[in-house]
Length: 137
Figure (cartoon, rainbow, N blue to C red):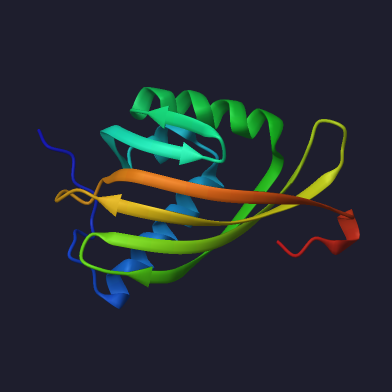
């Protein structure tokens, strides 16, 4: 059985926005297994300075991420799209184990296979420490 994740490429503005919203909703669930199913079995990531390969590594990466990034909340926005590629800008907020709050800003470039699964994800991310009173998400 072949996994498919609708909508499938080639993307229109409407289906690209739908894909971005689905990604935002998935990541905000903080469920690593659920999130991993949006990616191909052999997905390739660059996340900051880390390289992640395959769904199993995605699950491990996300489990570790959400242990360290407490009260995680993400907002994604479509930046551009073409046939099977989508670019997004995003920001998210989280608290570390010491109780300090951060806002992370970044951009992601995504490439999808014919089944709508993300094959490649390249993320550039910067963190800024914020006061709890400055939270927006």
